[in-house]
Length: 220
Image (cartoon, rainbow, N blue to C red; front, side, top):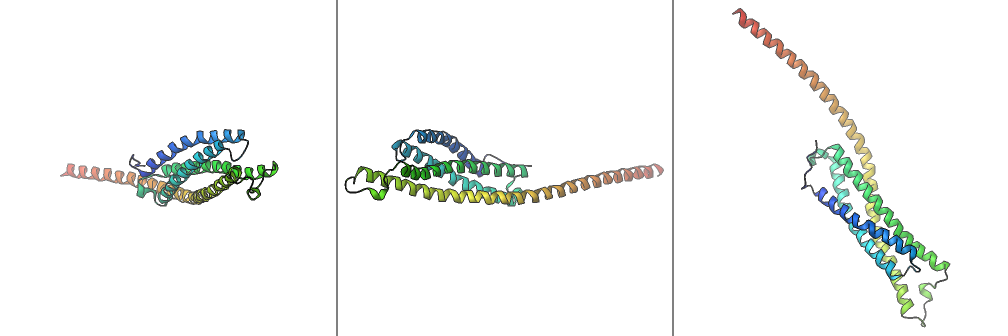
């Protein structure tokens, strides 16, 4: 039996994650649309859409890490936290699903960086090292901004990778924990069956004792 209540920290963080995810999905859709229409990877509109999406993904990854830690603790001893096996399983699936959705978005962002490099080479755009004295301001600044965007995304990718590795570890631990809980469930079923059987025998014995007492009272 589960004793989950509204004060459970997991539920509070879960609400924040789902709320942020609801906000992030339209940002992701908008980003994909802008990217498909952008003529250059350094487009200001594309950069703004990417920055907004990256900020939300970073917030999601931070909160997701808290959920991962909570689920890992609960799987070790569900009953200590007043949880039953189905509730722990629900929380584990939530973490995996949210982590998978964030990973899909992150992969799309990574495609943009890689695609920008390919796009520059294919269209004959100059590399950052090719900017000379004749264009020290505009093009040089754009190249610097593009390089900075790559560095920021790389840092965020590393942070998100840590979360997804943890989710993967959690998934493996969940399989082991699931098997152990199934075995414990079978043992509890056997105990319940034995208890019912002994309870029936005890009731039968009590009835016989009551009958004997009444007979003895009748003969006195």
